[in-house]
Amino acid sequence: MRIVRFRENTQDWPSWGWVSEDRVGVIDGSPFSDFRREAADRHLSAVHLLPPIVPGKIICVARNYVAHAAEQDVEVPVLPLLFTKPPSSVIGPGDPILLPPQSNLVEHEAELAVVIGQRARWVSPEEAPGYILGYTAANDVTARDLQRSDGQWTRGKGFDTFCPLGPWIDTHLDPSDVLVTCHVNGHLRQMASTRDMVFPVAQLIAFVSSIMTLEPGDVLLTGTPSGIGQLAAGDEVRVEVEGLGALTNPVRNDPHRGPFTS
Image (cartoon, rainbow, N blue to C red; front, side, top):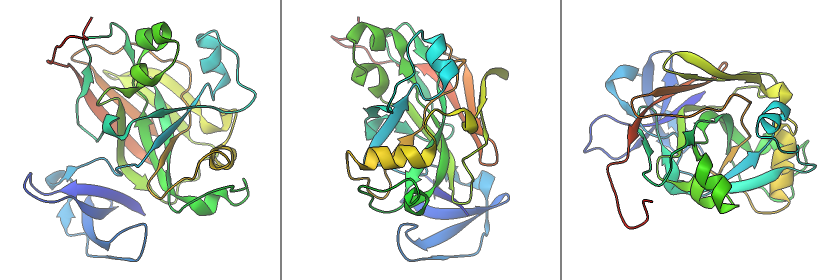
């Protein structure tokens, strides 16, 4: 099943929904508990898709593809290297990525994202699939110059709009061998299979759940392939996960300025 959050107009409260081909139906209830699917009687193009989840926390994995570590001239970690992004960084399909005036080098990072379905603590790799609601596409947008100058990653990874998610949560995707790609203005920038991950999904969930409790709706970004590149105002960036769908966002300059913009 493909799960979405959507509005039919700007005055509506967000609704849970499910997608069947080019149609959308309402989900009565929550995908994290009991629910009932109503008829898919709305055309997908007639609704506004929101981020498919509003996560309590976003846990990210760095350097989880060998080629990406090499292009950054860093070592592949012995254990998963974790960082976080704030929930305020989340945007949905079609929402603009805003380039902050504090940075001169904002880059895309296409990723497979995992949405947690139930509370997980000290979960084994064998048990991990049972704690997953599904998967979505993500873009771990990064102000690379700030990441490097700060020596830690909170500012460079944490700006508003720096975590596009979508277009939906796919509950039946097999994450073991799917292509993750990124196109900017139609040009291929990134492409790799999830089979090339250093730490696969089940191992990541086991590792993270040994550190912190994962709650329903939490999101785990599993790392980006090589080919990261700069984004500029006017670009359109498209992240696609094979068998899941594509997440497309325009890129614009953030019009706001303040005392910390230089």
